[in-house]
Image 1 (spheres, rainbow, N blue to C red):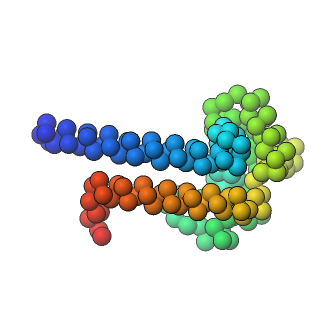
Image 2: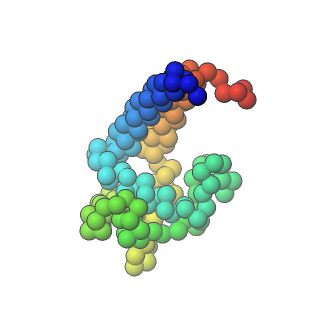
Image 3: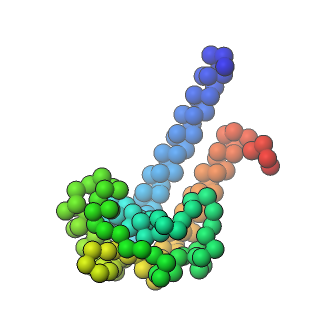
Length: 156
């Protein structure tokens, strides 16, 4: 690859990085809204939900077990505070306080002596439905910007 080609690729990669950063910041702000703007509280919620589904989810495809895009409670597995703490890279005590807040707010529930679940009813709430719709719009905008920056994909 010539120096000119490398410069062109780097310039586009920087542009894509800028698009990705804007997307990330928009998502962080959007996802924090139901949690009073607290990004770490939102990340804790998302980490719990992701952990509840880790045994089922294939990120590359829609899971047919999902009902209206949400896995039923019976298919979810509780996660521990320790697992959430490790995943987020924050102290266990901080995680415990955030989990307690989520439980007190009704976003999560404790199961057994150590497990935490995000119940289906929360994921089907208007607040989360609104997030899904708005996230979809951000994602479509990002995809459109990437297509415009790089042209149509070869298979389309």
